[in-house]
Length: 264
Image 1 (cartoon, one colour):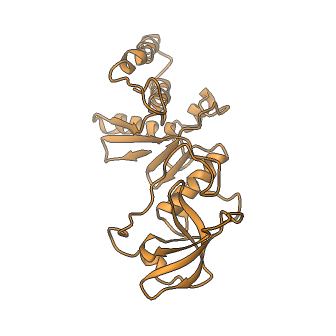
Image 2 (cartoon, rainbow, N blue to C red):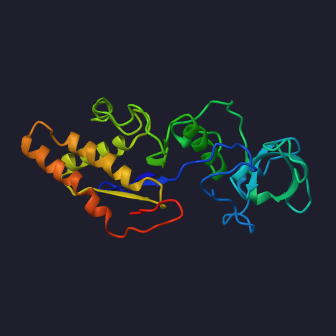
Image 3 (cartoon, helix red, strand yellow):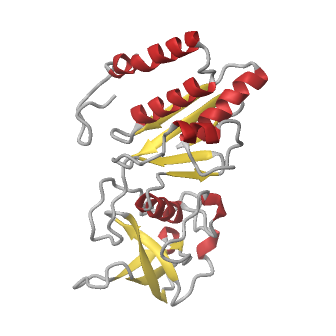
């Protein structure tokens, strides 16, 4: 995820890959967040107050975060009786009772439609954001904006042309959001702010183990090296030395985790 914290600090936070299984029965490399059993900290979301029998919704799923469901009936105790849509072949347990505060509205955009910016969606909540990110991931689009925040999912494979010199040139001098989501856009915004305001800038890169923080740092550094004036031989030398220093920086704090044997 990349986030602007004001004129002087920018950040990028990554997430591990998303599972390809649509249903809750499928496996996923990561445990996606699910609502607390006690309900939302802010109470029942306004977007679910008008839900009624027959509506499609998102309901909690222990494995994948949320599953698509249909409201069968509305109980008097502020809960819904729902039937799962994502697991039509489940032998049993397809109908469950879910508290109203744990339900999220579902909007059918079609099987292939995704949004480069989550704020363009009809419903902006955890379930719909996760679904949009998953769809984009499966289409080899690992980056998604939420306004000025860049969400990044580790593709665990090479994406042809995603980090080429031509791509860096395309993002140079362009406003955030003018082109598809990319770390180059965040890096370019910070770099131009540095030149324009003559104030120190910072890029904060965060994420859990195996999410791709180190690779994202390299991507950002390569763009900054490109944007800072590669015509100068002295600049090229400094840029190369900074990039070569990455293995040394990685040696601090390395540890073996369940997803990464050399986590930095």
